[in-house]
Length: 474
Ligand SMILES: Nc1nc2c(ncn2[C@@H]2O[C@H](COP(=O)(O)OP(=O)(O)OP(=O)(O)O)[C@@H](O)[C@H]2O)c(=O)[nH]1
Ligand SMILES: [Mg+2]
Image (cartoon, rainbow, N blue to C red):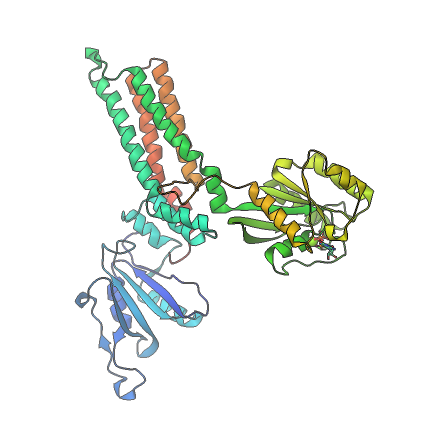
């Protein structure tokens, strides 16, 4: 990772928009800006065309905005505002210039090309934030929160990522780190005096302290299931026989005509997915090809893909067409009972507006497996379904509670689990009456894992993995 060169990227979405922001960060940010940015009177006034006035960054304060013009040689490119941030008080900790230009793909790209032609390197995804981390402007958990904040699609995802960005996790870690260091120093103090046989801490007390710490970590880990729902949402697959109304329900939930609907069985071939927020929870809604045996090669491939989606689903809506024959319904029911876990699925009898009155459905309604009757023409049945869908994932964390910490990141969870393991080992060492050296080694491993969360201990592989998921220009 080269921290000495100067990088640039377009930080806004590249489309027709009111403004675009192009960022430059690094040692040459100001020198390059002075080559392309000029102050002058209105360029459309011919009399002034040749009088470009140079701009000097030394003469201006940090955190100031300046109006002027971007020139490529004598060619006027755009009227812009530039923001100046002098190191170390900038996002990356380096000198930064942010050019706010007119939006639009070509205009923005022309400015970027001009900057690149002055020897500046195009930034990698997330490289500005990576530099912020490497320069100590934020720790790794905060850098990860930046990506989560940008990606958040629900209120709760937003709340938890902004809390993490503000340091909720970092604070927790520095607190427990202190506790751990205290315990270690107690153990190691005893080590120093081992020969004189002075027992500074009673074994029981040490054990109690470690167990208390372990409880703290377990409490945070327990929020992970909620955190996962908050951050990544629920993979929801709509499955069932052809023509059972899967695509109709998919479209109805999305309020759009996304999927083709027809009364010809086997309409949907490939699966289709869209995000939607229902009752504050993010769902990744997946419509699939109807499950049946087929001689058609394409349909068979579609069915294979449906099974793949089902395997990865957090929740499945299994639709049975209640207007089907008694035999069909019975067959679908047997299939459902055999293949699906009622904990992870909702059985729906579709097209209930056609008031089918099959005895088999009637009798089934009294069985242990819960089912719903739904119709896209009866709003209340869909509301009912939505409530059932979200009920399964209603988490008990209240994100409005001050200082509340929710674990949303798998990487953090893995580090915390490693800590639990190390703490358990240290308890084992105490119980086995092993020497303090072993206990201290286990506790030091716990500190190491803690440092991996904040990035105190890390390696290029982890860093690359984290930052490659960022947007360009962030
Ligand atoms: N009356 C009524 N008709 C429905 C309802 N839902 C779907 N249909 C009709 O059922 C037929 C099949 O609907 P689709 O949504 O295409 O069914 P599908 O399960 O996606 O079918 P495949 O893609 O072939 O697997 C269409 O003619 C829909 O208009 C409903 O709630 N009530
Ligand atoms: Mg379909």
